[in-house]
Length: 371
Image (tube, rainbow, N blue to C red):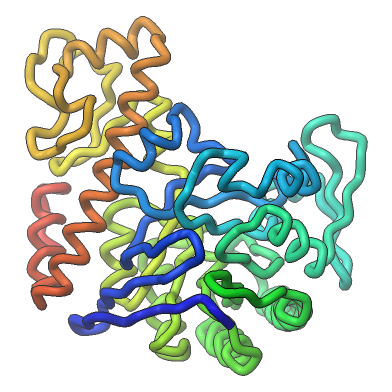
């Protein structure tokens, strides 16, 4: 396998690293901007890059539905098709097994999706099909097809899920085409049962992957349960491979997961929030529809260098109240900028051996509490 990972520094169980891909390196801990349909909503790829984002995420299911893997391959892959020149990770479609559950029929050999676009056409995806489509997309990191369970669930259901996920991971690995600067990640499942998490991690490690994701979290459980499952899982994963917590999350979730040994993150939260008038700042979140910002001349965040923070809160409030598209663009870019500033500060604090101190200081400013 040819995706390279350097573990540069540790501070407790927090890790500072670097992933090498065919389309450049990215520093870890890393936050990946979500570009589900080959676009980070409301932004051009140049605007995404300006935030400090180094790697983006696309979704195999959605790109399979529109415009189709064949077309993206014909256009030269996702990088040429979208204009993003850096690394790309593609989710396999496993999350849609949960999010589109009313349109999904599970089978032992794969998943049958009823199109969410026209509601009539049925598409069948095997683990091998998901890997093939991701090859067509030319994604640097391929994710194995899995099934994401919503919590809570029964132990019997979770046991069945772990066994199936292991088998699908093995099938995915068998058909993955190894090449320089590309890799495939396995996905640990096990719901909120510690022994099943350990079993899943052990079985995937025996198969051998370029990296390991922790899936099936932030799907209905408490933050405490999520942190416990992360802490249960990471000691059973190789130290020389990147670890990816899928679909997470808030700034506080990220800090807690980094503390427990996670290297990579993605979440729609900063971009979705930007489109719905919410701004992340070092002193918490702000709803820019709020009337208190109508005549506020201060910037969103005085320590942020993004274009939105060169303007007043009053102007941003005005854009939002007028439903101007520019408002969504500016807040989306600001939120990604905030997340990337956070990740840079996390990396620096690990390098300096002061992650715990940084975490405490950040939480105190962000929430007004000490944790």
